[in-house]
Amino acid sequence: MAPIINAVLVTNVPAPYRIPVWRRLAEMHDINLKLIFCAQPHIDTSLDAADYGFDNYFLTGRYQAMERRFMHSDFGVWSLLNQLQPDIVITTGYIPTFLFAFAWAVVHGVPHIAMTDGTASSEKTLSRLHRLVRRVVLGLSTTFVGACEGSNDLFRQYRVIENRIHKSCLCAENERFSYPISESPVDFIFCGRFLAHKRPLFALQVAREVAIRLGRRTSIDFVGSGELEAEMRAYANEIKEHVDCRFLGYASQAELPQRYADAKIFLFPSEWDPWGVVANEACATGLPVIVSPYAGVAGELIVDGINGYIRELDIGQWSEASVKLLTEAGLYKHFSENSRAQVAEYSFDNSANGLANAIKQAYGLKHKE
Image: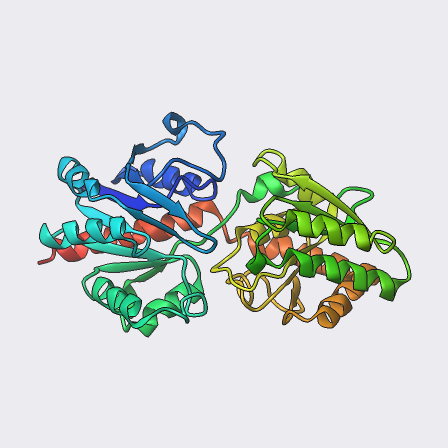
């Protein structure tokens, strides 16, 4: 009879696209999974922690959210790990709290699993100190879990053992987003925070240029909020003769599927994004996606000329791609079908199995000693 592995995962906050993965792991008969969170949820607060489906603990300490990352430091994770006595420790980054958990694992001879959604592209500007920290952590870790092939390529840059690399993909609940496209959809949708590196103003500029090329007014929905909203509204007012722009505000997880189904093309012009679960949601709805090469989904979930276009952040290139999709019905149908097919393998079950394989391999390597 296989032993039950007590695993503890230390991570940021309860993310709606990760909770189902952890729940599936916790349901496995040979893994007893517990989660330690740095802070309370801030993405979707509709689900009570008692309903997550796994044991969870919340640290205190100061949590600081920044535009691209966050910071948290709470040495209390050490005493909590003393209490839980895990067989495996998993951390999802390199902030102080995670490093304390990693150090606990090293001191107690417990296998450590390094998990990341970072990529070589998203981490290319790291300082020497940050790279040194990663070399130390990865050098003393047993197995490795990336969110995508880009993450696993990042592990390879640090020369980890190839057969110890696993993938736990980022995903959405595909079935829930498989709404039929509305009978009168808007041309475009942008979904995300209104921050500079997400380039929401670029999406508006593309909608304007497409209107000029098509000789008709285009339409775009913005789902989300953020510091650029006032500037976006002002520009939308300037170009209202060309673009019908709706600001729909924040959408809950329950509301999101209909938002995507009300549009034809998903615009994802991010300057920096390790992955982009919004693209999973759009693909599951059957939307073609136009994305910059700086998002992790580019070249993996979104394949150029198959279910979308990967284009540099050039208004002319994005407008040309948009016009093709809006004027060639056969091409649009082909891309739409391909989007649903592409996203099918990005499932919670596959994601949970990838992490489970890393846990079992790390445990097995320890007990071979």
